[in-house]
Image 1 (spheres, rainbow, N blue to C red):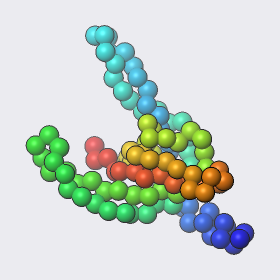
Image 2: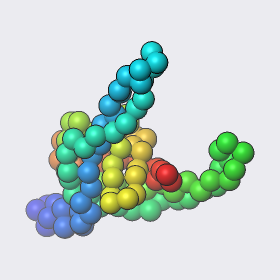
Image 3: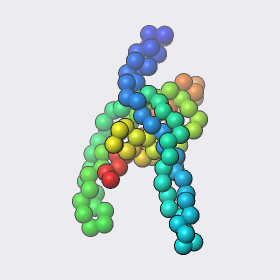
Image 4: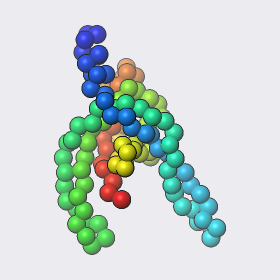
Length: 112
C-alpha cells in the first residue's frame, strides 16, 4: 500500500497556485471581482476532453482536466488554480475515498 501512495505523490509534479475571488467596490455601487493567491500546491494534471462551444457569438474551445493533489479543505468550486499564465476554473472537488488524503478536482481551462 505504501508503494501505491508514494507513486501517486510522485506524479504530482506541477506546482499550482490556488486563487480565491475577492470583491472590490467599483465606486459606482457595484463590485468588481478579482482573484488573489491563497496558497501553493503540487498536483497531477490529466487531460480529459475538449469541446467547442459558442460564447458571445464566437466559437471557443474548452479543455477539461482532472487535477489530483493532497487533500486540503479550502479548495472548492468558487476558486481557481493557476499554472503560470494558464488559469483553471474549479468545477468540482471531491475526496474520492473520504480519507482526507487526496483531493480530485475537475477543472476547465480559461482562455483570457
